[in-house]
Every structure is written in C-alpha cells, then in structure tokens.
Length: 184
Length: 116
Image (cartoon, rainbow over all chains, first blue to last red; front, top):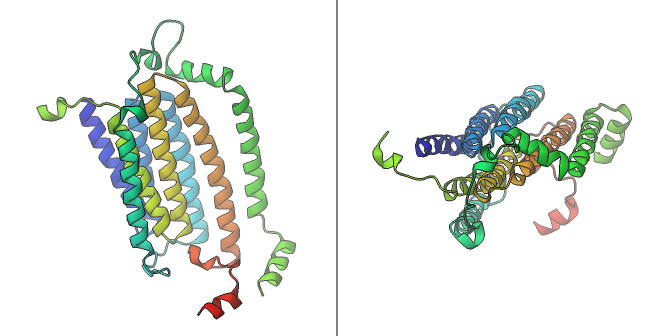
C-alpha cells in the first residue's frame, strides 16, 4: 500500500509540475500548481510529517495559489504566452543544464555517503516513547525551544513582508511621476 | 494492486529521487518561461522539492529538526510571494508587458546599437 500511494501521488506531483511549466495560460499553471502541492502534502503524511502536510495545504494551496490567482485576475495577464525565443538556443541550453543538474542530484541521492544510513527507529517522529508526544507536539517542542530565536525572526520577517508589499503596491502619484520622468 | 507493487519497499531514495525530478522541472521552467508569474510558480516548485527532501531526511535520520526547517521555509516562501507579487503589480502598473524580456531598463541602449 505504501508503494502504491507513493507512486500514485509521485506521478501526480510530476504531472502537476509539468503542467505548471508547459501550460500556455498562467491560470492553468496555477491550477496545476495546486495538484503538485496537494500531492506533496500526501507524501508528507506518508513521511510522518502530519503538521507540515496540514500547513502545506493551508498555506500553499490555500493562500499562496489564491494570491497568484488574484494577481492574474487583477492584472488580466491570462493571455497565452508566446513561444518566441528572444535568446537563440536558450530553451535547449536550459534543458541541457536541467539534465546535468538531475544527473548530479540523482548521483547524490543514490549513495549512502551522501544521504547517511537509516536511523534505527523512526518511532520518535511518528509518536514514539511516552512523554515525547505526537508529531505536532514534537515539532512544537523543537520549535519553541531550540528554534525560538529563528521563530521570532520569522515574525519580524512577515511584518516586513507585509509592510514591503503595501509600499510596493501603493499607488503613489509622486513616485509615478518620478518614474515616468526617468523612463522618458 | 499488483503483488510486484506491493513488494516494493519505499526507502528514502524514492522521495529523494522524486524531489530531484521536481527540482529539475522547476529549474528548467524558470529558465525557459517568459511570464513573470509562471517563473514565480516554478520557484515554488523548487522550494517544494527542497521541502520534500528535508522531510524525507527527517524521516530517515529520525530527527524532528528537519521538519522544523520546512516550517521556516514555508514562512519565508509566503513572505517571498507577498513581496514578489507586490513587485510584479508595481511593474505591471507602469508597463503592460507580461514577459521578463520587457524589463530591460538597466540595458544601455547605446551599447546595444553599437553591438548590432
């Protein structure tokens, strides 16, 4: 059953990823992205990352893709992409680079000196000995003890991102004039 | 389900290989696509591949910290998308182009003509 679920949702992940890259219409790309994200969430559950699977669906599929669709809708850029290639041979070069990258990473994944040996008991991530709690409790305990400082910095980062996007998206008459003067 | 499929044991190599494929698709898409929004989506694909790698290593090495790192990657990805889409909206307000090739303000027009 494990193998069946892995291959089914692995294939869905790759199909969604190919859909993102190959779809001419940005809306279709966004929908394919949802397929990939939900399939990756299922693979997270299979790897005993229950909290992350929920966060993946809520944050990625729920918030980020909707943000993408909002921007596509607001800007009205849902017309198909052109196949015109301004830099000659760029597509071919990109695919060759991709194949080389894939070969390198696959070489690393197949070797124990790169990935390390499997730990003896994987019970402690899943639930484990009493007192450690389930997956959510374990992530929370690690997050609020060892990673408390990065967690606080994340809060600052999110506030900065909100301020930054508001400043960027704000329509400022003054700034627009300066920019058009520059451009002309 | 066929017995051949049932007999396959899912080791850590399988999700790692899948993550490598996902990362490569995202990287090639980022290099080939012209639409800024689709390029952004390809970045998300690459981030997801890395997350999958982190989670499978957390499972294999029996270390919960791999999953905590993914939590931070998700937060940074959310912030990145918010700021990036803000930049895209600001760009689109000034010029109607939907492709990355239109953004050539830093290019020197004189040098370009000389080169041609």
